[in-house]
Length: 77
Image (cartoon, rainbow, N blue to C red; front, top):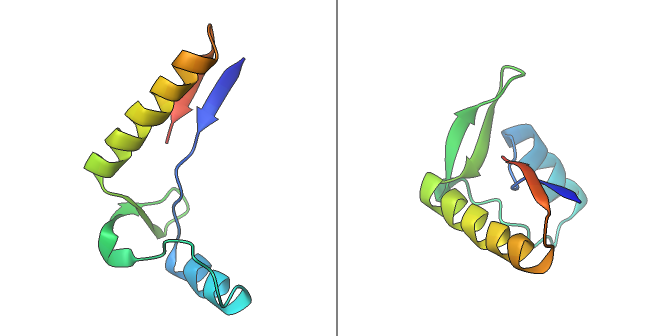
């Protein structure tokens, strides 16, 4: 079994659509709590700060390794 771990990220355009379509969303779209990263399609996206990202990666990787013996984590992005 293999896992691909993808953290939540968003662009300004995506945030606007989410807020319009899901007025009562509880999805964390706080730009100040994120850092900007240049995306492959010529747009900036908001991603978790490096320290938060590292903590998430470690936590989820530990859960996978402890519960799915022999599993492979393909990547974390």
